[in-house]
Length: 350
Ligand SMILES: NC(=O)c1ccc[n+]([C@@H]2O[C@H](COP(=O)([O-])OP(=O)(O)OC[C@H]3O[C@@H](n4cnc5c(N)ncnc54)[C@H](O)[C@@H]3O)[C@@H](O)[C@H]2O)c1
Image 1 (tube, rainbow, N blue to C red):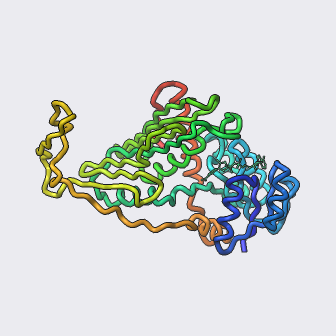
Image 2: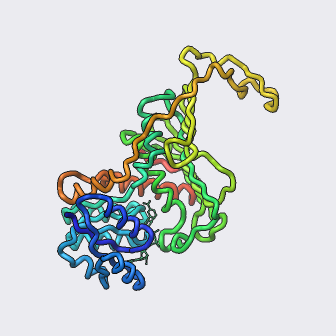
Image 3: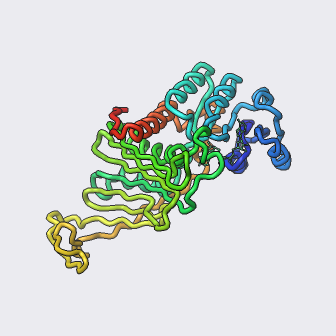
């Protein structure tokens, strides 16, 4: 049985407690939170409430620390845990920048313990569907992928509104969506990056951002996150040279995919559309030229990340989210920020 300790018993601390209770081979035994009121909550769950980080890290039975605190504290807590001889799974983003991520990776290698990041959205079913459609070339060769997440509430809450704590949407949702994109093409490099960050309704941090990642295979990934949109936007759009996929939500069922029929190449059918005005380029195709495709079935994998975590502590597997990926995610974040500051596209080749 892998015994684990949680640092930061807020929303994600509780999430990891629930997950661990669904997965065989792991038991969370203790918690540390700077907010003393969390001690009672931990005890109600049958957990030891450590009075300090050192006390938690000094518990010999614990071999895994789950870091679930605000983003600015990830580096220091992770390094302290590694130096105490623990394996670490830290919440995303790994750190505040790539330099810090490299520092933590070096500490993990020195300590001979594993260090990984909770990139749970690699197993979202909408993402797995996009990955499958790309791999199988269902709608041809790909040019453009849009990954958009928009909410309605307008503002970032609590520490997410504080730049010192690592607030803002680029660190919050951005790091998930970037990690997903990089894992669509793990063998490709990102040549160039464009970024634009805005504070629309939350002062001090970005409550909206957009980023473009240009892969060296010619695909452009458009990522955009906003906290205020009162109109629904698709979660994903994937443009192939034989068809198009649209996913509306965070699952594999709510979308549509269409492809041009096999023998159709000239796209010469012009179907009259009254409000379009004079344009042949933008005129729709005749319906019989288009084939509506079933979306592939995607199995849910709610515990895959956790099972790998447990197997990694036991030495039977290595963590899915690797050191190279952790640093690369943060390098892309740095490049997006630099692009926003300089109003330039940033050349990378990573
Ligand atoms: N992977 C995901 O899907 C996902 C989703 C949400 C949040 N997160 C990440 O999880 C982390 C926590 O987010 P949250 O929403 O749970 O925040 P939260 O505010 O709900 O909880 C954070 C907890 O950490 C405690 N804390 C703060 N500083 C501490 C310190 N130095 N030592 C010990 N405890 C400390 C706070 O008192 C609080 O109880 C963030 O890094 C966030 O980006 C990940």
